[in-house]
Length: 339
Image (cartoon, rainbow, N blue to C red; front, side):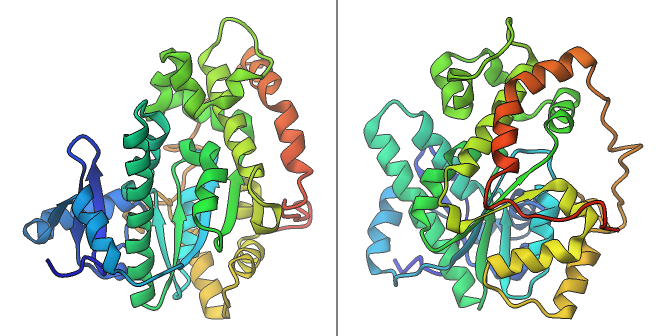
């Protein structure tokens, strides 16, 4: 077998312990989410996809060149503009930004939930190898890799950041009442965890173990606990690597945020790049159609929480919110003076 280095991992199957690979240019990843691009590539080039076992990938990796090309990790609380932030960063010509790539998120899920030590260890190895493939492909294309992780992995930020010691870290959050309102209106895939065994809950929502909360646990309390857990995960990474952003920054002064983000990533930003960043925010971030606009009062509106539900959420997140707002790595922007 020729070396697999230079291939891009598209997905993996933990039950079969296989990884799907394809030799593809980073410029092909133009959709908002990694999954969207992979679905298109499977349809267009499915016959070229190579499926290898975890053992074959591990064996082949012995011949790979060293690479450390992870420029930044993005952690977020969900429903907070993280896709818009990813699109902004993708506008930089020196960046390959991937939003929620399964080859990195799924091994983390296996490593976190498996009761078998050998399986957890193998999953951690596969995570690192998939990351090396992505970093290597980015390097070959003359780009720096930036990865936005799913919100439910933010509690794992300290462990993930340890795997990428040179990467800058971005943490993004939004008003918890708005986030919880969005989750209640359109429940995420992890909503079912509310009824899962305690051990499973703790893997996603460690805040449940120590927080003060009303009884019985409602959906609002559960989602608020997830929110708090993601903030705690963000703040647990090394302070000198971290930049914390409030969603309001993205909507108040895109140019100022972009300059700060690229500086944090140690990337130059020309006026042309900054103009492209601003242009990227004019469309609905999660749509493949550039003509779709964000409509907060219509198609994308959220129903406000009731006063009682607001109190439930606040009782869970108030301490953690105070900590993140006052964190030394928190970006400061005078919102009153911003356009």
